[in-house]
Each structure stands twice: as C-alpha cells, then as structure tokens.
Image (cartoon, rainbow, N blue to C red):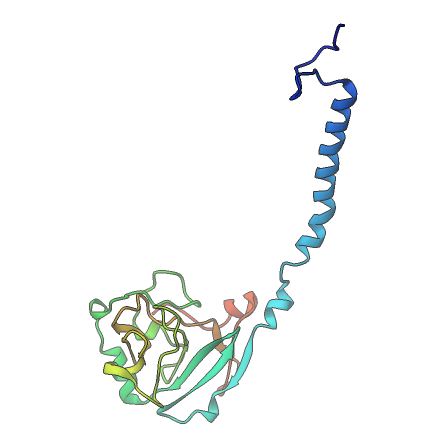
Length: 207
C-alpha cells in the first residue's frame, strides 16, 4: 500500500495532513494562551504608587545627640545615629586607603563613589544605614551594647567591626553597611525609601 508523502513519524509511519493540522493548531493555542496570560502576569509587577508604600517617615527629633534608634523598613533594620562632634571628626579623619571597602555603598549616589564620610551622610550629624552585617546578615550591636574597636557597631557573630560612619574596619564583613535611599522632608523628618522624582531632588551630591 502506498503512504502519503512526508517524513516518517516516531512510530515509523508518515504523518498525515490531519496530524500536521493538529500540531499547528496546538502551537497556535500555546502562543495565544501566553498572550492572554501576559497582561495578568504584568499586573503583578509593582507600580510606582505601590513602591511608594515601601517608604517610611521618621521623626529624628526624638534621637538625642550621642544616641541611636533602629527602625524597620522593608523587613530589615535601619540604624539612625545622631552623632556627636567627636564621632563626626573621627569618621572624617579616616583615610580611604585605611578602609577594607573604599566604596561609599550609598544608594543615593552612583556606584564606585569613594567611601568618605561626607559621601555617606546627607547631614553630618545623622548617619542612616541599613542594619544587617554584610558578612552573613546578622544585626550588629551599637551604642546600647558594644560599639567594637572603632566606636561604631560590632557584629559578635563573627567579629566584624564598623566605625562611626558604619564602614567595615576589621573582620570578615566584605562591605560597609549600605546607606538607603533617604532625604530630609523637614529639619526633623527623614523619609526613607524614595520615588524617582524624590530621589532626583533629594539634595544628594558626590563630595
């Protein structure tokens, strides 16, 4: 018996025209299903107004000079320290080549900016940093417990020491504590977590 023209199928028989139509129809259905599903998948991406809900406002007037508070933002701790003149001077006296990590690690500035104290604060008296050790994510101790060898923060898990600008100085942590997006809405209110428009007008500049 003579078979229809075409390449042999997996069972040794040549596919019929009907088989080809079934295969083509299945492919079109798969593509069509993807196109229908895409708008629903895309809706799961956060919109700008949703991202704005990830910001918090903090009244820093409640933080006396020489003390600090910890606030929660996006599921993690943020340290806010009201630094003394001595702490500011100590941070600014450090030479870059003395730092294990010479990057500012500041979300408000371009990557690779030098890690001077001036590039890590918007106002010298207030240092605001994310509060997870850059080694394994533990929460370092601060003024209330143990500031370590450099008067900043100390992570007792594996012995990382941070200075008064929250830069790593000794221990296994590879990077400085990062500075989150923030700016001062008023003299005493800081907003952590910015929209793109706010970020472009936040007052940050490379020093």
